[in-house]
Length: 350
Image 1: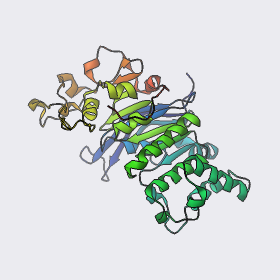
Image 2 (image 1 turned 135 degrees about the vertical axis):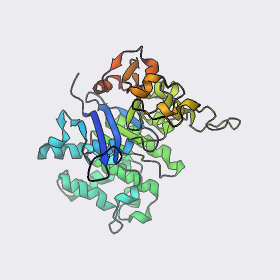
Image 3 (image 1 turned 120 degrees about the horizontal axis):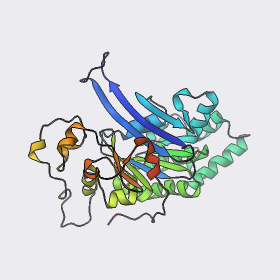
Image 4 (image 1 turned 90 degrees about the vertical axis):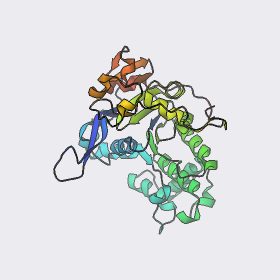
């Protein structure tokens, strides 16, 4: 197997609120988590989970904004904390973020042109003003914006959808290998969500740019991605083919997430399929599976042991003792279950 393009290898991230580290003031945001973006082909992978699951912490680690407490983040086989200047320059250009709130990225005193010309200048990706202008206009057109109606305006003069699409165009300008989109449509009107998601999908399929899509929304994860990693309290609960994970979830937490997806059947109440929590679990603490206090299937071993990743299918793993008859996959081997698959057009889950 060739060296992955980007790899999160057995990473733990802890935040300490006091001067001295104690159990009371230490928050484990990510626990022994692994993720792989292969180098042989482009993939679209969702990182999903409820608020506090560790999604944004994982994104910040992968972007190099914070350092792991333990484990490694590797780009083309090189630890990003040990890169030389040339390697870091390449990494910064080839791994591009798109953030949740596009308005926070803009300086209100500058025209929107500023966020497009600055990265080109910083990375030296053009020979003269004419080439820079041509590349900017091409990138805007690729995301469905008209340069004459976009350039020269201030951020407040554009809609949220336009500002977010400029951020997609900005990422595209740098010819990245990976785009990391953290909740990119959560603050965009519903009428524009499908447009932006479709543009991200086209970048993945037509321009061979791998996509890491951070979201709490399983519906859009299914629409955009081939693979998915489901996080719960910083640990990987289930990962693999988005089709299998969402259509036929094997981990009780993923089942709970899927059951909470709004349905169009007005005779069915939201959440009526939620998992019942046994009274015996109420108030009980766990040193094993993080989900045990909420799980109706919790066994005694769940409370004392952390379940490994069991390979329930060729393209799926689940961290749950319900599948302990399946072979164990080391967390650093999680990339073995990620594939690029033929994906249906964007349609809602029925």
